[in-house]
Length: 127
Image (cartoon, rainbow, N blue to C red):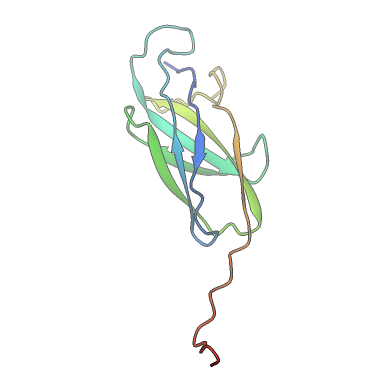
């Protein structure tokens, strides 16, 4: 059974662009695509890529139907915008964005700017 994606991804705390981490919070779905009660929700997949609307070429699986947040290391992404969505996954591996599914959550975009330079070392104040 496929589930309606009513996940709300809130972008939190981008880390420095080298080895950037992204934390998401969401509200889990409460019904399946057809409006019936949930019965076999397995977890979620967070998808991301560099183009708005996809394709989302990267994926992080969250194999816990009770999860409401996850932190993902998206690697080195200096001077790039990444676009994120979430999908629900049932125990058979069907995703809500599969053909006949309900789709994805809202898309969230985040720009990762240049890494700030390291502070100078070995400076001595003039007297």
